[in-house]
Image (tube, rainbow, N blue to C red):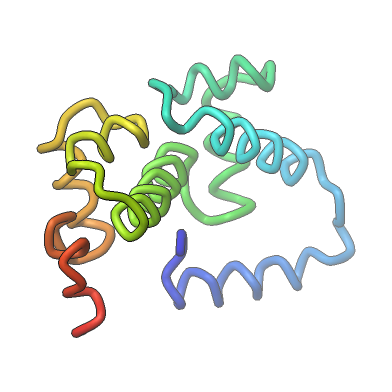
Amino acid sequence: GLFSKEEYSNRIEISLGRMNRRGSEGQRLVHRAMAYIHEHYAENITRGAISSHLNINEQYLSRCFKNEIGIGPMVYLSRYRIQQARRLLESSDASITQVALAVGLSTQSYFSRIFQQLTGMTPSAYRRGERDKT
C-alpha cells in the first residue's frame, strides 16, 4: 500500500508510544487532510490547497504529517495516487495516459516516473502482470 513494511512498523511503534495523547490536534489535522486528499486526489492539489482547506499554514501541515505518519503531505498524495493507479491498471482497459489523468497526474511521462519510483516497475510492466513474478 502506501507505506513500506519498515515505515509501517516504525509508525506502529510511534503510535503505540502516543496512546496517552489520543486525539491530538496534529492527528485530527492529518486525518482531515487525508480525507481531503482522498476526495480530491484526481485534481491538481497543492500543499497550499490542503492547508487552506484546513485553515492552517503549509509548514504546520507538513510538520503534523511528519510527526504523525513520518512523511510529508505531498509524498502521501503521490503514494495515494499510485495506489489508485494500480487499482485502475488491474481493473480497467484504460490507457496509461488515461490512468495518469484519472489519478491527477498531468502527463504520462511524469506518471510513469513516479509509478516506477514507488513500485519498482513501469505502469506497462505492472499491467502485464510482472508484479506477480517478483
